[in-house]
Structures are given as C-alpha cells and as structure tokens.
Image (cartoon, rainbow, N blue to C red; front, top):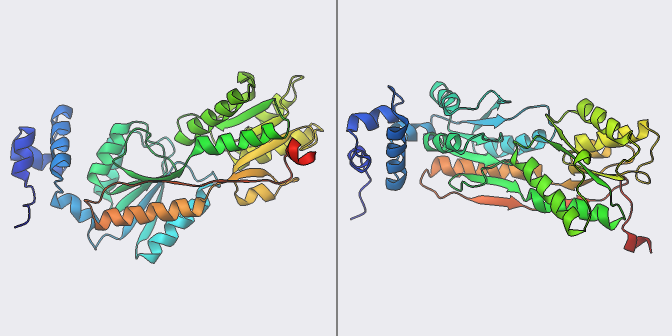
Amino acid sequence: MGKQKPTIQDVADMADVSIATVSRIINNKGNIKPSTLEKVELAMKELNFIPKTLSMLSEAQSKIIMVCVPNLDNPFNSPVLEGIHRCAHANGYHVLILETRDRYSRSEDFEELIRNNSIAGMVIMSNMPQQKILEDLSFRCPTVMCSEYAENYDRVSYVSIDDSAASRKAVDYLISTGREKISLINTNLSFKYARHREKGYRQALEQAGLPVRPEWIIHLSTTDYKLAFSNIYHMLSQADRPDAIFATSDVYGVAAINAAHELGLLVPEDLSVVGFDNIDLSVMCIPPLTTIEQPCFQIGYQSCELLIDKIINPASSSKQILLNTELIVRGSTLLPKAAES
C-alpha cells in the first residue's frame, strides 16, 4: 500500500497545537501568535501537507495568473510580460497584472490579494523586501519569481540571468577598448539585479587594477529617462569626467548618449556607453547603443511554465534557471585595441 497522505491531526501533533488552531491558520481566521504560525507552517512543509483550501486555488475553476510588476514605466517589463501572456494563453490561463510599486511590503498585503481574488498562482517580478513574505506567500499560493529572486531562499522557483557575470562582460569590453575611467549608472539597490550588476562592475574594475570612483556611481530611484539625463549631464559637466559609462538599463544608456551630445561630446570618441537589456530603444538613438541582451521574452515564458507546473503538481520541487546573456556591440563603443591593430 502507498504511503498515506498526512492529515490535519498529523500537523497538529507535530506542531504541538490543537486541530482548531491549525484549521484557523489554514482558513486565515482569528489572530494567531507569530510563533504558533511559524510552528504550524513548518510542520506543514515538513509533512508536505496541502490543505484543501489551499489546493482549491489551483483547481480547474481558477484559470487566472496574477503577475506582480514593480512598475509599468520600465520598458524591460514589456517583453517579459509578453512571454508570460503567450505561455499562459497557450495553456488556457488568463493574466492579471498588479503594479506593486512600494505598496506591497507585508505578508498581509499579499494574503488579502489571495483571499479576495480567485487566482491559480502568482508570478513575482517585484523584489521581496523580506524573505519571510516570500515564504508566507509561497506557502499559501503557487508562486514563481521572474527576473528578481530571493538570493538565499531556494524553495521558490525562479528564472533570471547571472547579472554579475553579464556586468563583468560589459565592463571588460569597455576596458578592452582602452577606457579606464568608467562610470556606473544604476537603480536603487533594493533590487537584486541592481546589487548584482554593481558587484560585477566593481569586480571588473578591481581585476583590471582600475579605481572605483564613488562620485562616478549614480543610484537612481526609478528607471526614468529625465532623471537619468539630468544626473548624467551634471556628472559629464565636471572637469574630471569619466570616458565611459556602464548603464544598468538601456533607458539610462540612451540618456547618457543624449547628455553627451548636449554637452558637445562625441560618442564613442569622447564617451563610450554600454547599456543593458537590448530593448527596442537601444537602436533608436544615434549612435545605436552597445548593450547586454537578456532574453526578456524567454524569462517571462519559462517563469509562467514553471508556475503552471507548480499549479498542476503542487508537490513538485523548485527549480532555479539562469539564462544566458550576450553583448551586442554597436556604435556607442570603440573597437577593442587588439582589433584596431
């Protein structure tokens, strides 16, 4: 005979609480002490116990996937969302998009979403301010992270890229063209990708024996062209200015090219620029932008595939997928010194 499925009594025994307490937690009713909640959730995870009220979220009557996006201003998100939509549609699911910005920072915020919406699962493109939020959310609803992910938590599947390695590739290329005064234009470090791209930038400079100049590292609050333009314009206006910019977004990269033009600087002769993402915007500037191409559509598509697998097979193990990136060389950078000779 096969192994019997764990029961609510098994959970209560392991957590050393009453069945009524486990039931209240499952149904989100009543006030439960955090320590008790943690014990019961740990028991459920260890026993692989899936309550009926939770498994109902992934039953056939719910064909809605919710995608949590940090903001809709960043053009990087568009092809990722297209990949999610394409996969969802191919598998008979519908997609709802939630723009989280900074409004969803507690477990209770997401729990309310799950209670008030009939959703099959969630794709999270936003950064999680606390790992506990992701733990709570993934326990209550099939969840996959997309592009962003929790660095020290492998119980939730994700699809992303190696941002550090991609950044090293970009900065190494600038160094190979003879550039030694390299600036970084980055977003705020609450995002995993921003931290990892800055790490790769610093590693490439240090390995080449080049200084990291704090005054040439700019952190912006959002992926906004005007904000990037004004900050870069100010930096390039200084007597001691960089001769290259690595931008962690193509939006920032185009802003750098236009700021240089405004100041009468030639790109790439006076200033070389490398962006990140290879979105359509990267070929809409003069000269076109050298950039790191990440497979945005594929990141979204595979994230949705992992989520649907989790919806259909709740006990399936988590998967962590890092896709490859490629440096696309265009006119905003010089040729490497070796190629010139």
